[in-house]
Image (cartoon, rainbow, N blue to C red; front, side, top):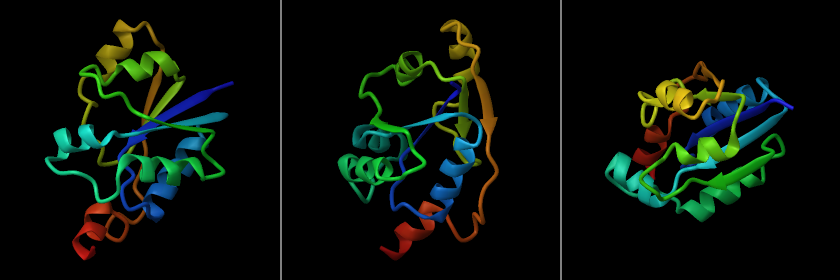
Amino acid sequence: MKRVLVFGTFDIFHLGHEYFLKEAKKHGDELVVVVARDSTVQQVKGSLPHHNEDYRLNIIQKLDYVDKAILGHETADKYKIIDEIKPDTICLGYDQTHFVDGLEKKLRELELRTEIIRLEPYKPHLYKSSHYKKTQ
């Protein structure tokens, strides 16, 4: 079974998120989604998400094309969860930049032969969380 891992905030869930997750699912048999903790979002983006981590996790868990959804770790080692899940593929969003620069190196250190795929956006001029936050 080929396991695909994605991670993100998924705040104010929209069609761009849905497209991203469905495209990721096409790359394997099992889609595992790691939802960012509120503390991680605060650290990375400088503000808390509109919806808290439990709310965002619940939305993702209800999607029939997601096989497993979990909260990320609050530890300093954000890559630890990759070692636990041991994905065959990691799909990244077109604009995903955090925890990406050292990803290939970390996979080698963990001795994982995980493929990294950067997915294309779905109408980013319409479906991007920052657009929705402005209207909230």
